[in-house]
Amino acid sequence: EKWKAAFETEGREVYAKRQAIVAALKLKPGMNVADIGAGTGFFSLMFAPAVAPNGKVFAVDIAADFIEAIQRTAKRQGIDNIVGIVNPPDALSIPPGSLDLAFVCDSYHHFEYPQGMLAAIRAALKPGGQLIVIDYEKIPGLSSAWVLGHVRANKAIVTREIEMAGFRPLDDLPLLTENYFLRFEKPD
Figure 1: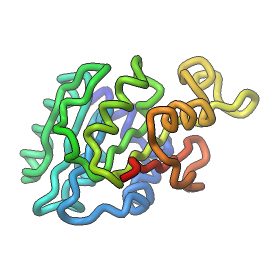
Figure 2 (figure 1 turned 90 degrees about the vertical axis):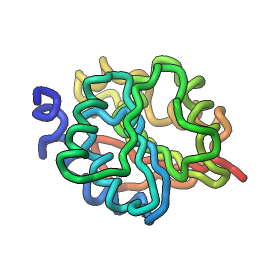
Figure 3 (figure 1 turned 180 degrees about the vertical axis):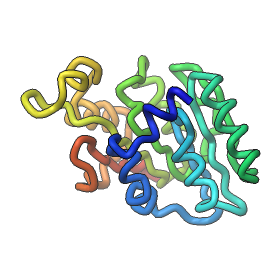
Figure 4 (figure 1 turned 135 degrees about the vertical axis):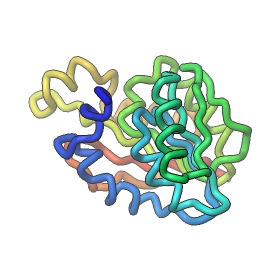
């Protein structure tokens, strides 16, 4: 409940614009999606009906409490296509070539081993699969002191890290102001 109060508030840009973010993903029935760094799971719970009946949502987090809470909420809401995964910080416990989309929202800056995680995400994606990274803009003089002190890398560094991991940039969607929305593709 403490984390829901922090993460699921209209004052948080990604929560306030959650409908527009989900629409921009262009999810379709049958897709397999990973919500990496799922936290309280509000995106996982939104993705599930969009990919049903045959698609799956992998709610991934390093904190078992988050995954257990997501699974309880899904069960209570009658959602049966969310698979909870408690994940190590340097790997991804999802079968190779099984994902259509990997979604990382306000979590990339927490990656302790970005190259290891990016390699694992790349392996889990199907050829042509997409990686979406939404994270805080880190701009001296514009970003808050909290962001400047908390967020490891700015958008240019994040983009470079992801390209070095073998992803091709597709677009930088101007949907958000405090955060950026980057779309990458795993080449065929």
